[in-house]
Each structure stands twice: as structure tokens, then as C-alpha cells.
Image 1 (cartoon, one colour):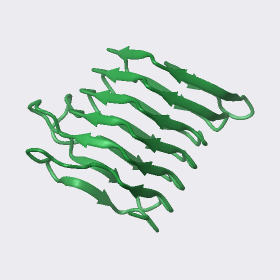
Image 2 (tube, helix red, strand yellow):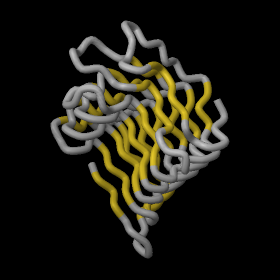
Image 3 (cartoon, rainbow, N blue to C red):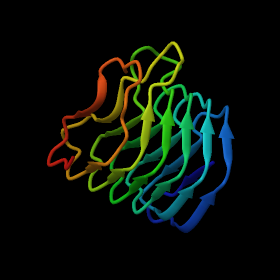
Length: 173
């Protein structure tokens, strides 16, 4: 499932709910400054070659809630290149990074992502041979004013590095 709209194009006020996406590059991809006010609710993204759910290129005001991102080749949920003012809430993210060892995370924010709320998510390493590097990773110093609170990052047998990494600026956790 892909919603892409570079400015001045617009994709607004859309709900994507109760879908199953597997075996694709991305399970769900939202890309572009024109993508705004979208709700992703109750979707299942399993065994995609790249990411389960990706928010990229300045999309904003997205609610990602109650989804499952599991056994994807790279990240479970990936925010990259400027997404802001998004809420990642109460998702189950586990067993990601199955394609490469050890490189990818269950949830990652990088490259100028800011003012996002990451809360009440459950991140697990899973039982696959390859494990996610971090449960939640704020991977760039230009990621600022993000909130990472009340997440369940229990690591079972451990990720390669740990539950949470933050090199962002003004992160609340």
C-alpha cells in the first residue's frame, strides 16, 4: 500500500485500516509533504523485503495505531527525511531485520524527523536468527523534539545493542 504526494499534490484525510500487506518492498509506504492527516489502524505488515511501515519525505500528522510490523527484512517502522508531528501508538513490532545482520531496528527515526510521539508500542526481538539492532533508535542528531515514552521494550534474549538508542536533540523519554 503506497500513498505518495509531493507538494503541491495532496493526499489528505485518508484511513487505511484492517489490511494485510506481506511480501512487498514496504508493507505500507507514506511519502511526500502532500501526505497529511492519514490514519493507519489495525494493519498487518509481515515479511516485506524492506520495511513494514515507512513514513518518508515530510509527511505529517499521521497516526499509526494498533498495527503489527513483523519479520520484515529491514525496519519494522521507519521515519526518514523529515516526517513530523506524527503519532506512533500501541503497535506490535517484532522480529524485524531478517534480511541483514545486524543492521536494522524495530522502530527507527532518522534524517530530520521531529516532533513525533512514539508511545505505548511493544517491541520484541523475536525468535529468528537475525535480531533487530535496537528496539527504538533515534539515529540522527538532526532528529529533534521527539517523544519516546511508555513503550514496552523488553528485549527477551536481547537485541544486538539494546532496547533504546538516542542521538537526537531534545528527545523526551
